[in-house]
Length: 94
Image (cartoon, rainbow, N blue to C red):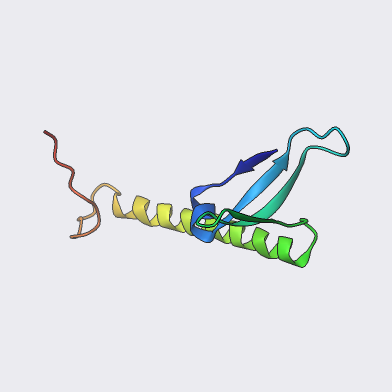
């Protein structure tokens, strides 16, 4: 079994469980899950269940949020545009 979480999943408290190998049944399947790391609780859902589809939508929304955030950053750093206070952070070198 493998557990994967993107940055968006950490924010939304979601993730994916992938069955890599199974001696007693099918393998190669991926299931959505919710997780609470503060108490170690994982809720794994069937992809076709209502809860599973709900969690999949949360994961898809996280990806869309990241895409929009990166597009915003790209637009703010285009050459020839004046930078405004707060558009970027100054990093000092020692």
